[in-house]
Length: 210
Image 1 (cartoon, rainbow, N blue to C red):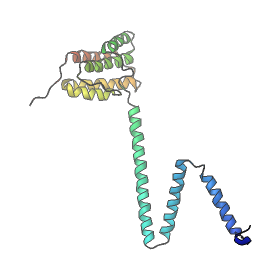
Image 2 (image 1 turned 90 degrees about the vertical axis):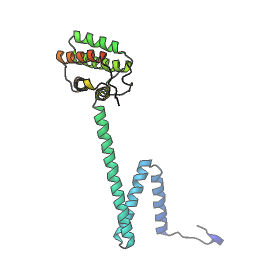
Image 3 (image 1 turned 180 degrees about the vertical axis):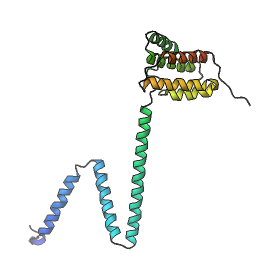
Image 4 (image 1 turned 120 degrees about the vertical axis):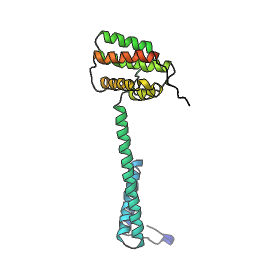
């Protein structure tokens, strides 16, 4: 190779090896995804901090503090992620009250009666609880809330109609049992929900007085 003034320049075997390694490293990192790159850089940071900590002195103390902060952050991230998964699982395990939100209370009630006549108690109970919830929405005692569960409905309705709070809670638990718990339902359970339906259709909200 010719340099300035025609003088030959030798880069040396070690220099060539280092240049080749750097080129290979660059070509490998070009294909990295974002997560892979972040993970590699984090590993390099931890490695540098460990080396600095092993060297002693003030730099070692600073490195240990940074490593401790990274560890605390990682534990906090894992804890938060676990809580989110648990919360999502618990939510998905609780069935929503309405699958099709377009039916009226009368339509749900008619479906419940037809299913009860066929002895399909689980389905009949589900439809009758939906009729109850829709009735309270149609009377504007409760606001419509997409994604509401039976338990959430019972809690909200119990605030408006305190004398029926206990029976509303029982109906919500029965709804969950026949919907998610594989409970086949019974004629007695359907009759109890029917009695609650009759009571709610004429019940008046309790207003607070000062």
